[in-house]
Length: 153
Image (cartoon, rainbow, N blue to C red):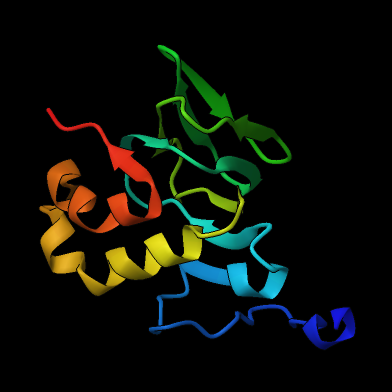
C-alpha cells in the first residue's frame, strides 16, 4: 500500500542502507522506497568524479551550496547555489568541485539505484581511490553491474 511507504526525515537524518555511508553521502530516498522510480541523495562533492555514463538512469543535480563544475559534451558549466542540471542517460559527463569548501548538492537518479553505486564505492574505497583521485578501471569493477561506466584512459 502507498501509505506504507510514508516516512519523514529530520534535518541531518538519512535512510539506512546496506552499509553505513559517511555523512557526505546522505541517502534521503532509496530505490526501494520509491518502488524503483528514483533515488535521492544529499552529497558533498569533495573530489572530481571522472567522465562516466549512466546507461539506464537520468541524473539530476541541484546545487545547495558552493560551486559545482559539470563537464558535458566538451563544455564545462560552473553551477552555483540554486542551479539545476539534467544529465541524460547515455551521455558521458564529469563532475568536479568548483569551490572550497566543496559543493553540497541534491542528486536524483531516475530510475533509482545511485545509492547502490555509492555503497559499493564506499565499501571498496581503498581500491577505487588512489592519492585522492578516483581510478576509473577500479570504479568499473563495482559500477558496471549498476549500468554506470567510467571512461578509462
